Length: 266
Image (cartoon, rainbow, N blue to C red; front, side, top):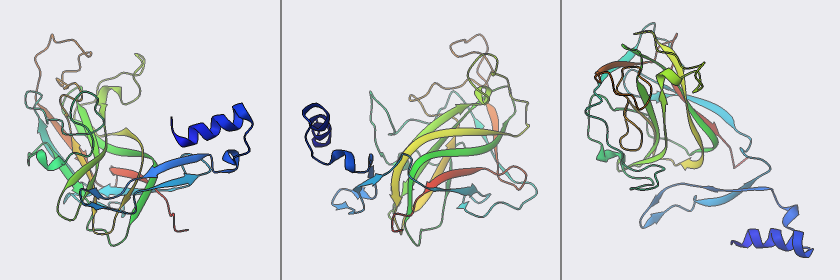
């Protein structure tokens, strides 16, 4: 049991006047650079009156040249297309796993492949500090009834190390919800917005780093590989098929990662 928990019990069970109830109710750890031998002092405990702390949602939009920018797209038509073969899934390296390698494993272990898209900002000229929920608003399409899309938020260090911060999937047929009344197939080749909830975090993307968003359609064995047939999970009556998936990044169909930016210096 930690010191804070003991102070809380002392206050309520022993009547100790230790000031624990006068302190901010939320404490959280702000991550930052943490390479061996180069641990940043910006890794620190922070406090807040609430969780998430007050923040401003900032959209980093995907671009055709694999960039991330805060400027909304203006192109009339723009998309990136790849082929997702369920027989050749992207391998899992790191993340929030329980039974195999976990944590901020270097995503450069995933080699360059046409179905693994790396979008990233230019080198940051100042720190970008986030605390709270992160989501991806993805305008995407597939040529069949169903497929998966995976998103990873990544901190790219100056030497190229790609530290995974958050990752999560969405099954396209569950885009409206997982209850039976909400499950519906995709309309082939028709873009729709799919919101990927990456959950919450607190991290400082430090000056000299890059913010990256990796998009793909598999992450195995962390997540079940979608056969792209539209069958219910666990059913294997149909032969798996190769899906042709598209990520849109134009004015009518913008895709973005939404970051909860805070300003601790203020």
